[in-house]
Length: 363
Ligand code: PLP
Image (cartoon, rainbow, N blue to C red; front, top):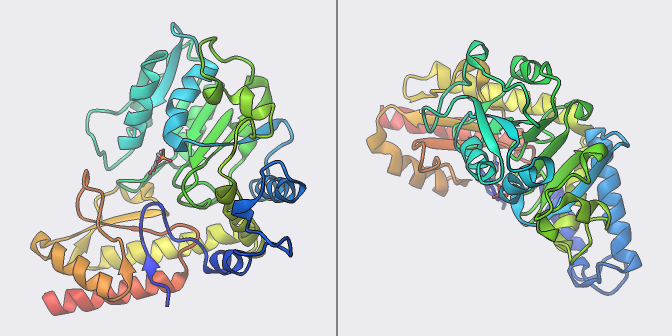
């Protein structure tokens, strides 16, 4: 039986996806080989790749004037690629700091451009987004970078934050690694969206970059070939050998999203899953969550036991109950239940039942 895996990433994938991959593992559609064993230039593999991109475009409603690039190196490699592709060393770029992932993006961008931090950065793990009144945009920024969901704390930007950023009229870049496709978004408002795959997309080993075409062709001259988005845009992301099996599995996930009713249907489920868990935590005097209520993440639900001496028991017993990887990130402590698209509602119910029982037994 499959456990409910609350890992922040690599994370649980939909069971239907795993079963489909299993059924095709040794012999993909009568070819006598696994997708893993195919030449990436073969007609069979190209059909897998084209369907994957078409399905992603459909589920995210990506306009035709955007390129979709599939890039090795995870989201972290884009921390450098973004300034290299969009700015020169003397240019100013604006970054909002909402936590650890924003900080990492800022640190890397600082090597290639002058970073203006719009707000934040005083605390490593803030529990709320800096108040919009305190945001300081620079006049001449080449772009504005945000992290739409801070995975470690479970802090998610809200409509008012996006509106304030879009109102600047500058190219907006978003790290959506941990909440891409968790709800509907209007891609046309962004200059570039990127995400590491290992949460809502598929297995690790790949990042998705969605970039407006007019932003291509501007990379600084010393940009390494494989960091230059043009390389991917001009070669269907196959300048060198891509992570073929990761692409295939991501394609199965996009297909699953379509079959589940699309991102709209999934977002309703996500909202219900997250609110059920937060409501339970809020009603309990045994557990607590420290994130500002209106900015809590749908994807990463952090919580603490009031008596932290029970943390080890909680983790051991939850694991025995088939509830895996609930330990919070070491930088933030406590517990974290990552409940990405693939986590079924039954997983939330099982977690709440366990938490109730544990609280009763240890009250
Ligand atoms: N950005 C966010 C919000 C993340 O959660 C992560 C990983 O957890 C990353 C970036 C880095 O992703 P990768 O490991 O694919 O480089």
